[in-house]
Image (cartoon, rainbow, N blue to C red; front, top):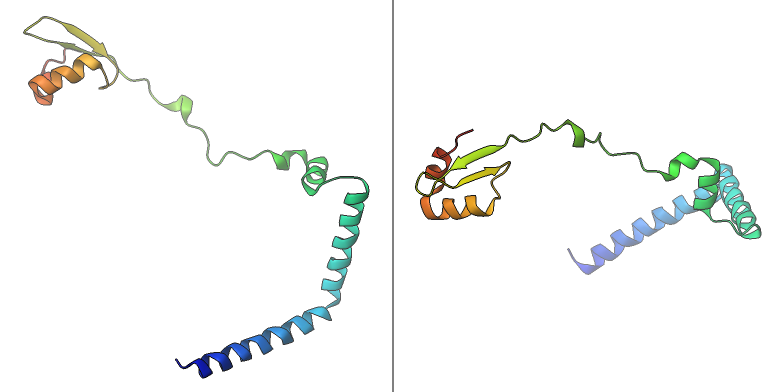
Length: 121
């Protein structure tokens, strides 16, 4: 696209936006909102209040965030205790997860499938 075409397109967009701005300036609803905001900010400054303070005053619950989803912390089923017995050494390991130090060492030495076959409970 040539620079001249781009310039004219931007010029048209600017003219359209300026026309829209002028029509909004004449809107009585917008004038009332601007007047309200100006008076509200002056009142807040007069009493040394901030918008969050006023919101908290008018609606104390709005400051607290609602949980995004219901917490499922208490609904999870507890893990079962697994008991592994090493047939070579006779050593027994009880664990609820796979992050046990001795169990990891056995799996590294003998292989995961072999160690899982030692599961007694």
